[in-house]
Image (cartoon, rainbow, N blue to C red; front, side, top):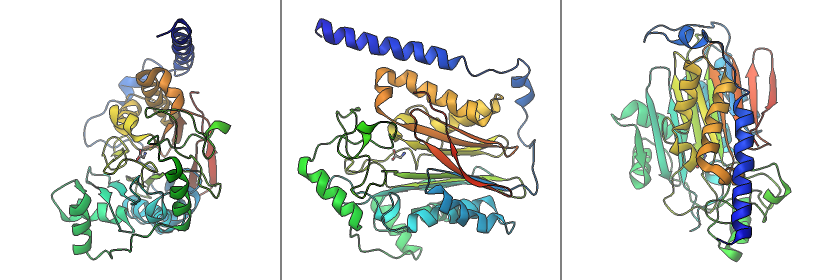
Length: 366
Ligand code: GLY
């Protein structure tokens, strides 16, 4: 490494280190907090009857929350709500989730999804093609098989056997345009969900593990939000979570992200809270992100503090490369308190409860 390169490298590492040290100090807890949150299995503190709430990632979450609210407001279960909610997003044409999303680098849309209820029941699908509602297939995996995860052709066969129609597999207009644009260079350099810099706009995103970047915006100017994650608490105080995604645009065929990996892209522990992740899945998988956030909440952290602690851990693992990715977590605890934290600026989540329906801007580490 040349002197200049080595200087730049160590300066970057140094500034990120200083930055993390400073930010890490922001999480404060009283000495009694940890003890007061350690409870036995079966004890369910902080039950909030009559107080349903749903949160979901990105601005597409507003419409998804409405779908969930139709269930929650009729005293339906959190599980039914999180399925109905993200189905709204899966149905929207030209969105970045579901069959309208960007394809992989071979031109096929492949979908991942997971769902989890308040009793550790969970199901997921990965690398699923030509099925409109992967979240509902994930639920069938949970309810009708002894398994947690089905992938690829097997997941598709299961879906067809369960009565899900096989769609035609054509790309949406937006996805076709994006793919044609990407094919001009065909660089294998996917990146997702960084919105804080001009450099992440279409055609000029920053470098990441693979080098430079694929478009973070679609040609129509929409952001490449590849994932919707949703967590909800129903009127009985039970929690559930769901995530559905097309993953990174122009990814390697067969690539699966964090979303269908229980404990990475989403996790629910009804004694503590429910968490969902968005952003670069590989980095969420590496540290079992959503499970880590639940455990931080169990130790007494608020939802935002817990999400922040997980983001800080990812930043420590990634070192200087943390600047080149985006990850974010949303969390809901057993009291119905919600919060989130992102690695980079620009992330927000949608909130709906009896009193409010709005986007919530989220603090970030960088
Ligand atoms: N977070 C979605 C993915 O990485 O596939």
